Amino acid sequence: MSETPPPWAFVPFKPKDTPRDVWTAYHAFRRTRRDEAYPDDPLSPDDVTEARMQHEDPFAEEDNALVLDGGRVVASFYSGWAKPGSPGYDSNRRFIWAGGHVLEPFRRRGIATAWFRRVLATMRAHDHTTLNLWSAWPDGHAFVRWLGAEEKSVGSENRLDLGEVDWGMVDAWVADGARKSPATRVELYPHRLPEPLWAAFCTSASAMLNTMPFDDLDHGEIVMTPEGLTDLYKRWDAQGESHHTILAFEPDGSISAITDVNYDPVHPDRIHQMFTGVRPDCRGRGLGKLVKARMLRYLRATYPDARWVITGNANSNDPMLAINRQLGFKAHRTGSSYQIARDALEARLAAV
Image (cartoon, rainbow, N blue to C red; front, side, top):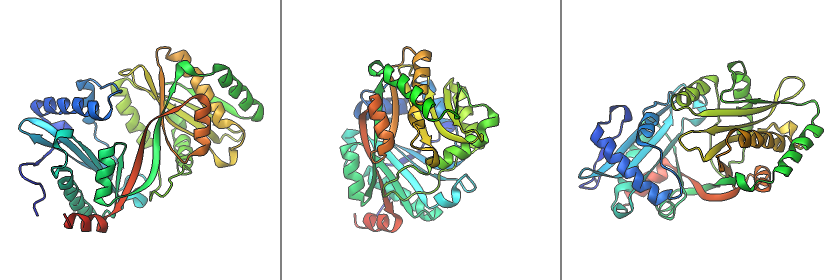
């Protein structure tokens, strides 16, 4: 069986080498994709999108491709995997992540199936044994289930309308947290975390991230490093994005709680909550509420025109969801993470 059903062919999409006519077609595609998948969300300007896509991740390898019908882009696909030697590589080398979007009039024509034959070939070449997929849309769920993937975890994008926040409750959380942990020092670091704190921040954030609920998802270790933070800031410096961080320190100088957000001036109505975590041995003292409340007060004062704080959570993360729901976060979009073993994918594709 051929890997691409005629007349479809995958055109390599390498942003740094993409000619202008392909970029023009791609931008038309992403506008239609936004209308189909994210109709309520703003679209980044073309030049901003190109600059961001041209940044190469030093810790990952990837394969990106477009499908064209004449000169029109009708589908976009990606696959990505950890680069040898990257942080956490040993525990993540068995995984590959893949996905894409096919415009509605071109679905059920074998385009996505052909892409996953290509993904399977990549899995064989790099000895990946587990494929990770994600979807929040009916057609996507139907396809990955048809492919044979199993749902492993469910999560939601949750949004907080800053105009509906009970600021009296927020102030009470700050006071209560300070009362319960009088020896804990809470510090705000606007725009960029000072470099002398990077190592401690990355070590603490990695430890906390790995305590998150993953449900039935097979996963490797999450490893943050100063090198990764350097790359992140390089990207954000180029676009004028901010990274605001609040850290709680215990008397011995160790970090007991973290919360950080990203603000992108291209979309001034929204702020993205990145991570909030409390060290397991420091839980039960209101530190999660304290750092989140302190951050919200800062965001309110700094970005008066912002309406939304947007975050993502596993639907099983009851402690964090309890805090978020009290603040007023509401589910905006729910998606599922799926996995399928290479042997199962190979058997399924051989049968169609």
